[in-house]
Picture 1: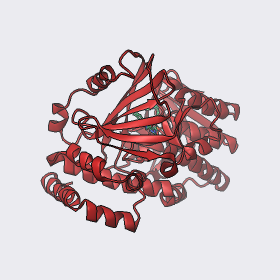
Picture 2 (picture 1 turned 90 degrees about the horizontal axis):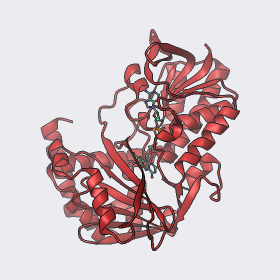
Picture 3 (picture 1 turned 120 degrees about the horizontal axis):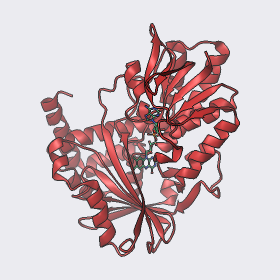
Picture 4 (picture 1 turned 135 degrees about the vertical axis):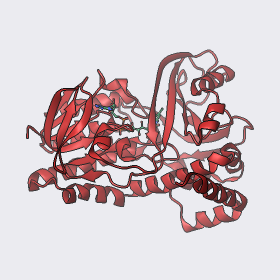
Length: 409
Ligand SMILES: Cc1cc2nc3c(=O)[nH]c(=O)nc-3n(C[C@H](O)[C@H](O)[C@H](O)COP(=O)(O)OP(=O)(O)OC[C@H]3O[C@@H](n4cnc5c(N)ncnc54)[C@H](O)[C@@H]3O)c2cc1C
């Protein structure tokens, strides 16, 4: 084999895997379909854990802002709830381009090879063993381990035969605004509302004059999706209505898609492993996939080193990466929030999710909301949710059962 690792996709998952694996002395080839890395959106709001995994201080140029509080608010009624730093820990806004460039530079200086404009078409198989990828129509690259870090529509995943029966995608769209007048740049906002649908709109200030304004939405049913205004219109409406952003200029538009129902049933096989969005490694309620995929890339690189040392790329050997990932706290949060999101999406097929979100916003206390967002439901929290929100819990349960009965999934 020419390389130890061939990685499809140079998003945060692929970059972190490449950086760490090359640091371990492995021969790495990274294939990216875009012309430059920064054409893709990386994700922006993260916790301290992401900075630790990136190994950068909060004074690094990779970090553009630090939030002291996060507010959830209804665009329709104004009811709101604030979760501050004491509950949430530190939250940071990343400068995505700097982060991606940093990981690329580290990987390349460790000896990794990066090819842009290299679109992976499928994996190459010898029997059951994956032995590399085909890309750009007629090119091939062979490696002992193939990594699918090529996002939500992963070609590695589909051609290697990974299944995702409960796959549900959240669609995101984002403006970078300049010329704003942000009163408090250290507070980030999440908004729910009728126009938003099943999801939320966010405002993450970069400074007093710049902010990221985005929207993420999950299609619960085709009908309800078609009734909603286009996501771009919802952002424009927000922008023009609010004093802080009224006269702002759109400096950049980007978008993407993230899976939101948790880890797929299996993300490793003989000679192949998935990482990041491709494996469903996204904490679903807030759509946070950066920390979870940096963690996965770090772990995968460690296991790749072991595989090279043992010269073992069998299904049993790659499975050790998956097993260790599934045992982590982050993975438990992904599964808890993913199961929650799946139930809510089923409920929303036949019911009004925004009314449910309104109830939560106006009645839930900040500490419980924080536990729900992080997928850390302790017995006490579950008990208080069951007691305080019994009618809502019953409605969600009934909506779930009804839609499962209709759709059969
Ligand atoms: C609008 C929006 C906002 C978000 N905000 C946040 C946030 O604030 N915090 C957070 O934690 N997460 C956020 N996320 C989620 C986060 O961006 C993703 O979970 C994260 O980027 C996943 O990284 P990844 O490397 O697995 O996939 P991706 O970032 O999707 O990267 C995949 C890479 O593979 C490349 N690729 C795809 N197909 C091929 C192919 N066939 N051949 C070669 N290359 C290919 C792509 O071009 C891309 O570079 C957001 C997502 C969106 C859409």
